[in-house]
Amino acid sequence: MAQSRRFIIGNNLATIDSYDSVLEKSNKEPEKLIVVLFNDEFPDAETIEQRLKNWKNFYTTTYGTQFYKCIIYKGEQKIKTDFNIKDTPTFIFFRDGKEICRIDDLEETDLNIPLITASGEESSDEKRIKQKLDELCKNP
Image (cartoon, rainbow, N blue to C red; front, side, top):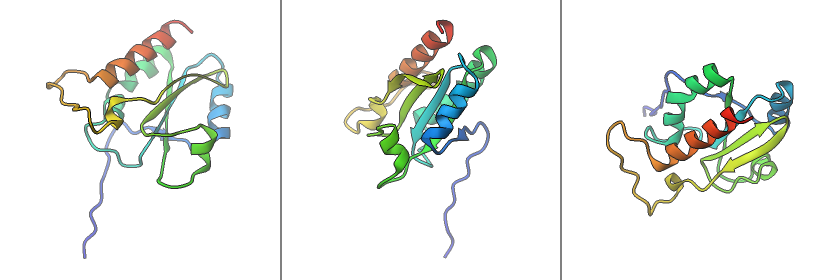
């Protein structure tokens, strides 16, 4: 029986897998903004993760922002406890080895909220994350 495989091409996020790794990255480059997305390994194509991949290059080249992904699995996982992850996707923003902001109440996680947007239109989740990125990048 053939197995279905999902290939993700292009703008992948570097992965990170422990609390210490996140703090090490953040402490290694003080004053740089580090964004960690805690999400499923293979999210659907039209999710906030895919949209983040489309515009992360701007924040990386313009502000030096670093983006990472931590893969969250069902069941017990130490990093979920370390960062108090309740839902995916969750974004945590770090600077100087400290968590400075968290966005974990995205509409994308609520199945009762329709997420249909017109072609080329940003979702409310995307607007929120970009607004927070702009704020944190422009006002370190």
